Image 1 (cartoon, helix red, strand yellow):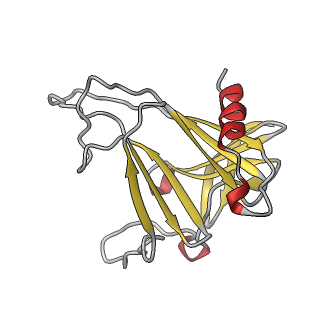
Image 2 (image 1 turned 30 degrees about the vertical axis):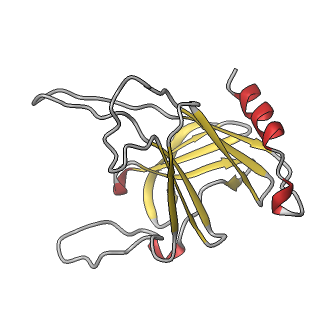
Amino acid sequence: MGTGYIDYAGYKECVNLQNDDVQVVLGPHCGGRVLAYAWHGENALALDPRQDGWTYGAGTPPMGGPSGRRFDFGLDSHAGWFAYVMPNDMMFVKAYPTYPERVYGEMTGLTISLWYMRDFVCELEPIGPREILLPGASASFTETWYLTPYAFPEVRAGVDPAHVAEVAKELMI
């Protein structure tokens, strides 16, 4: 338990953060990408094995990523959290600050972007407000991630939004 380095998904010396329940693996080779966010060994993040070890370099063919045949949509919400109930009996919750009085610079001015690709992956992406930075300045937008066991219903339409909200809000206390 603790921190260290491991080889993961074709990358050498990834940062490994782990306790009795959760493991987070960061791949500095690919922009600080989170490669694993796992609860008791079950990764909540979808990885395409064709991308294992891929890094950008001059003359390196692009990998593409899981963007083909995906469905994107956006929402405008200042709830400050959203959740995804997954078929592997987990719920992934993201919490983030919202700024109703600020301008959001995403193309359509939305605060949330979601995209699905078949049953392989769903990305939940909160969008921060527009920042105008002077040279040398910086900005940040923090997401807090939570992962908890949550039984996936036999029928997808059987997800109870009120119960999801109750469980998510309990996590965020």
